[in-house]
Image (cartoon, rainbow, N blue to C red; front, side, top):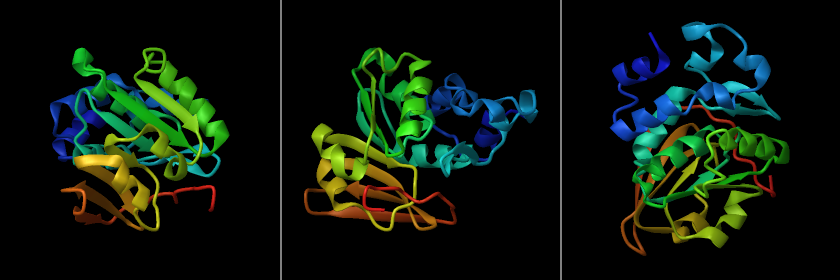
Length: 216
């Protein structure tokens, strides 16, 4: 059974546009060459529903977890989304595919603190021409400190575990916008109900690498 079919049958992938993005954006394009070459077809590591190392102590997240987080985030064409801890660029490319559908002018702003990973992520996302088309902008830097330059955002996705929600992100999303991120061993969704109210939802039972900031 293919990975995507498995994710659909197990209920991780539900929304048509997210399923379409998973089908069009190949995870193998975002793996280190040595891992990409391991196995064949449905038995390749790219098809494995598990986190895989991408170097520098970081991983490309488990596909089921990425699917779960994107379903919580609910990205849509035309939105501007902040992608924190972009790593090898897979989530950036998935989001770029979604926001640019129907030519509605969506954008993804991505940050990766490890310069070498940021460079590789940029190259990987470029395989799909999202950077050249102006859909994605990728930066080597601390997204918790530098993202304000590109606000406001419709939504924010973070792929590494923080100790708490950065207060700055709340001010950077629009009302009714979502922030989906890991804190400890839970995935949280924060929805900005108004300028003074935030709805919090916790989904426990996950494992992530820690979010790296300049102060780490």
